[in-house]
Amino acid sequence: MVSLTVYDGAMGIGGNKLYLEEGGKGVFLDFGKNFGKYGVFYEEFLKNRDVRGIHDLMYLNLLPKLNIYRPDLIPSDLFMSQYPALNVSAVLLSHAHMDHCGNIGMLREDIPIVASPESIVIMKGLQDSGVSSIETDTAYFSPRQPTDDLGLYLSSIAGASYQGRDFCCTEEPSEALTSFLSRKPGQDGKRAKKLDPGTCCCYDDAAFPFDISAHPVDHSIFGATAYILRGETTIAYTGDFRLHGKNGDATRDFVSKAKDASVLITEGTRAGPSEEEKTTERSVCDACRRSVESSSGLVIADFSPRNFERLESFQEIAQKTGRELVAMAKDVYMLHNLQCINGSCMTDGLRIYSEVTDRSKRKWEQEVVKANYEDRYVDHKAIRDNPGNYLLCVSFFDMKHLLDLKPDGGN
Ligand SMILES: [Zn+2]
Image (cartoon, rainbow, N blue to C red; front, side, top):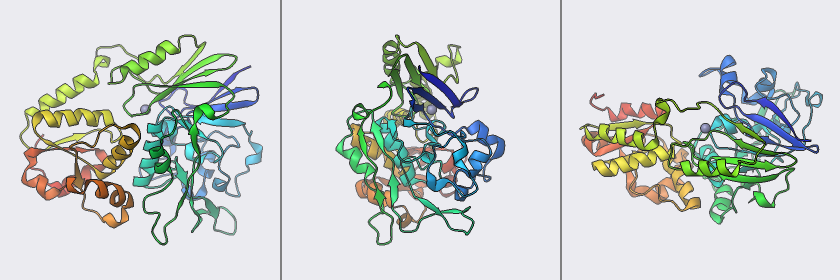
């Protein structure tokens, strides 16, 4: 008999950790970070301590009390044998937003992640170009070991390679994807840690307790995927999905393929259709275009950095209004790697904001962005001299750069 256990994700937004089991073997449907529950204990600078591994998260009930986690994240005062050990064959990842993937990095390393090529690239790209934490260590991690006598304080092992996770890709993995997963920018440096890649196979070739099929759906992040699991019962699972983006038809296609499912498990943050729910990506794009057309100075667009569909909308707006679209280097790093695996041309015509920073420390930027797009860089002085020529895409966390740009007021 098939059984479904909701370890997390009910009565909230994201944080999904659902376990589907049949015949003593099972799969997790997402393993995300529950921002709502984290927010009860943490905020801004008050964070869980990575040096205590999963101790804090287990103690505060932010991770399910199960014996399924990486041994190197378990300090000596956490007694895992008291918790049930599930026979987890894989995690089926719906998409690469943290509320769906943000606790994957803590799972035992022999549990593979089933994900679309885009989700895999986004997770690794985010790690390559961002700050490491046990929440963002979704594609690879630095193994830890206790460095105090009591075995409570867990530090990364100096000299040990990064360990890549095993992925089961929802498409035959391309050479570009395998090669992207095989190294971390900067690893050729003399004292740099290497990346010891995990395996990346096609999910068709892997053995799961269910017959699983993956279906792309529309969402604000690329690579969103729904799954249909066929066993004794047919179950359809989707994380966030929508109909109003450019890939709405993919969602409709999934809906028709899932029509024989007996159970539908879905994220339900906003189920329309009220008047406000009728906003489409097209109508957002048109409204933004009118706003840009009526502006003479610098235009700054603030949206989630992984919302590449919105970036595409602004590419169109920039083209139609005769402005140059400027993106942050880390977004271009991601776009470059996405287009390597799916053949799109998302970096076409993009300019890159030259941040006031020590670029020697940003190996991903040096090796990929600078190496491929050096002539596209534009700095704060050039933008300040001709603000009306540019449309700058920054998200909230990049607003600090406005202090270099010093725009002349505006609205
Ligand atoms: Zn999402």
